[in-house]
Amino acid sequence: MIHMKDVWKTYPNGVMAINGINVDIDKGEFVYVVGPSGAGKSTFIKMMYREEKPTRGDIIINRNNLVKVKERHIPYIRRNIGVIFQDFKLLPNLSVYENVAFAMEVIEESKSNIRRRVMKVLEIVRLKNKARFFPHEISGGEQQRVAIARAIVNNPSVLIADEPTGNLDPETSWEIMHILEEINERGTTIVMATHNKEIVNTLRKRVIAIEDGRIARDEVKGDYGYER
Ligand code: ADP
Ligand code: ADP
Image: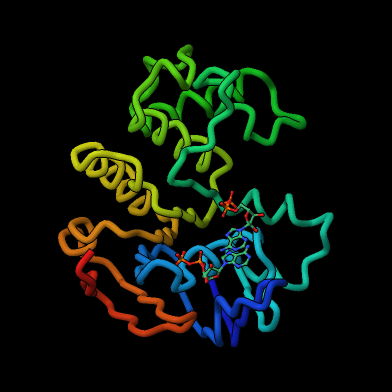
């Protein structure tokens, strides 16, 4: 479902971040992307949701070539790709409910359908009781759960996570991982960049290690492989 073919990325300042990557990720896989700082993990992941465009090569997600897609079609592509970040990126002036509803395709959806769907995803992340709260009134782990709800509200086939536990304590990180596992078990493909050695070595999944912009390892149930 995700197919990267001979992908290269050089930034305008000349930094060669990705140097010839070929990779296939099947529907329903859960993949960790690991590697040293500056290795190209973020760039690799940003190209998957078209935040960055490769200099060369093709990235095909669900038959759409992200490299060739016209600017005006990008929003349609993005709807099928949920994204979460280390720093959550919630809208501070909207409630939990509104942060999730805001991301929904609102055109031609009745208010009651929107409400049903938003409450459904808040239930998946176990935050139904905090729907009226604002981001500053809830914990970091709860904020990340809101971000997850927002990312899955349109039922994307892929969820991209860029260091989702980077700002969380170990216990909260595990809560987030269990929610991501549940979402993955319902069929959503997950690609997660992480520095969390304990999680990678405990909750074994496919590991893609990037070093100097190349794939250094690709293992079915791999380990983290670095000191930290
Ligand atoms: P985000 O994750 O929201 O894209 P970043 O902190 O990665 O935010 O980037 C913020 C801005 O800084 C972007 O315009 C990005 O292109 C630029 N940027 C990020 N990293 C570098 C870097 N190593 N060298 C030069 N510019 C960078
Ligand atoms: P990682 O996520 O593994 O730390 P990145 O993909 O952020 O790696 O960075 C790979 C390389 O590209 C680094 O040398 C970084 O400084 C550079 N880089 C990242 N973003 C930008 C940018 N927007 N402009 C220029 N260089 C960047």
